[in-house]
Amino acid sequence: MKIHHIRNATSVIEVEDKVILVDPMLSKKGEAGPPFTFFRFKPQRNPTVGLPSNAMDIIEKTTHCLITHLHPDHLDKKAVEFLRAKNIPVICSIKDEAALRKKGLQVSQTIDYWKRTDFLGGKIEGIPAKHGYGFIAKPAGNVMGFYIEFAGQPSVYLSSDTIYTDDVHKVLKEYQPDISIVAAGSAQFDIFKPVLMTMADILRFIQDAPGQVIANHMESINHCPTTRAQLKKEVAALGLSKKVAIPQDGECITYQDLIKAS
Image (tube, rainbow, N blue to C red; front, side, top):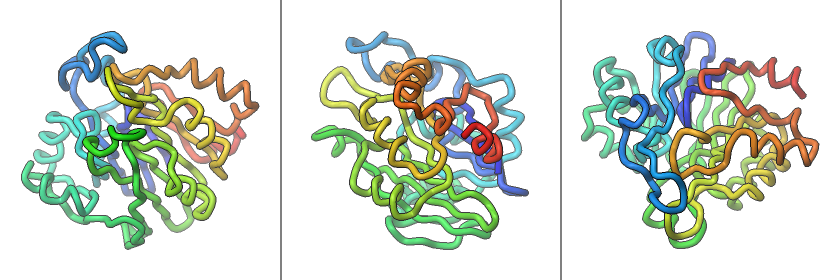
C-alpha cells in the first residue's frame, strides 16, 4: 500500500491495481474560493498553496474516488470537472448521493454509518464524524469517516473532518486500525468554536491510535492555523515522533516506511 499526500485532505491510496483518490481539491492556488476567515487568521484565498508538481501525474491514474463530505476544500469545481470528464466511479455517504449525482458524477457505491460492506475486493464501513465543537457542528452538516480493510494490506481509518468523539475513540480502540489518518489543521472560523480537533485532541488521537498516524489538512486552507512544525514539536515533546508521519505535499508514504520509522 502507498498513500500519496497531495494537499490538505486530498490523498491517493494505491493498493495493487486500485488507485483511490480521496477528497479531491484540485484548484490552483487561490482559485477554489474566498477565505474561510477574515479576522482570526490572515484572509487569503483558498487554497493558500498550489498543487505539488507531481500531483496530476498521480491523480491521472485514479480508478475510484472516495468522498467524505461536500465542503469545497474536499471537493471543488476542478475536482468535479475531472471526475466527470474521466467518468470515475465515486464512493460516498448515502446522505451525499443525490447531491453528487446532481453534479453529474457517477456514484457507484454508497456507504452507511456502522455498516460494513464490500469495497474493491475488501471491506469499508462508514464512521460518524462531528465537524466541530458545540453549535457549529450542526450547520457544518453531514460528514463521514471511513474504516477500510483490504486482504493482506494494513487497515486504514480516515477520520475525515471531525473532533474527538466517542465514535472516533471506538474505532481506534476496538477496530485497531494499522494506519489512522487524522485531519490536524485545527480549523476555526471568525466566530464559534473550532471545527476540527484542537491540538490537545489531536495529541489524544495520536496517543490512542494503536498503529501509525498520518496527519493532514494543514498549511493549505486559511482557517487552519496548525502548522507541520507546530505539530512536530508537540508530538516530539510527548515522545511520539516515531508514531506520526507529517507529510509534505506530494510526498508518498508506504506502510513499510511507517513501520521502519517506528
